[in-house]
Amino acid sequence: MNRSRYRNRMLTTALAISLCLLAIGKGFGEEFQGVGTVLALDPSEGMIALDHQEIPGLMPPMRMAFRVASPDLLKELKRGDRVQFTLKAEGSATVLTEITKIGGAALDFRDSMPKEIYAKLEGFGVTFIEADGRLLRKDGCPNIQRTLLSRGSREETLGTALFVLEKDSTSKHLIGVELRDTEHNPVFVWRSPDFWQIAACHFPGKYGAERPPTE
Image (cartoon, rainbow, N blue to C red; front, side, top):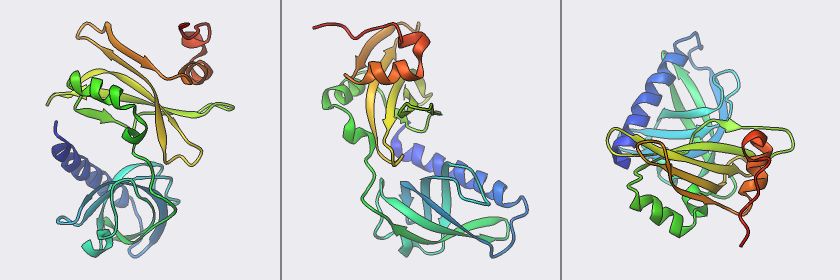
């Protein structure tokens, strides 16, 4: 699936979900405040997709697309920007009426991916990296996110990657990649130097007893 098709599908699906949520009794004109990161912009359709924190009184943290009151609200934004926004309930829909950039731009995970690893993934035909996998939290451990690596129009799953989320929960860096063949055998494994400590913290049964290979 190409990025344009994926973006359009994400926007359409997320909008449908948001309409369903607002239909559950939110009052007309009621406003909600949120903070998130820009995932996709479509000024021609007046849409923005956000990876947002909990929006009190409305919805838990998730990736969601919203209609904007005016395409002009999107003029100064780009993918990866950290933003604060206001949503307004209008009947069975919710409309984004205000949006402001806050702090610096959030890092896209590819910014922290070693170039040789990204090239390797492309060599295996990876066309889709789902960076919104389940966030794993554990006291005393960095937050990590398990991510799917897929390819092709059928989104054939090739393997997984692990990302560490920084304390601000907006930037992340890659710590490990595992690609598998059609029989689920590992065909490519890469682990950063800090992979072992972080993975052992979250998966002691799998990595706790292992050690990184010696040089």
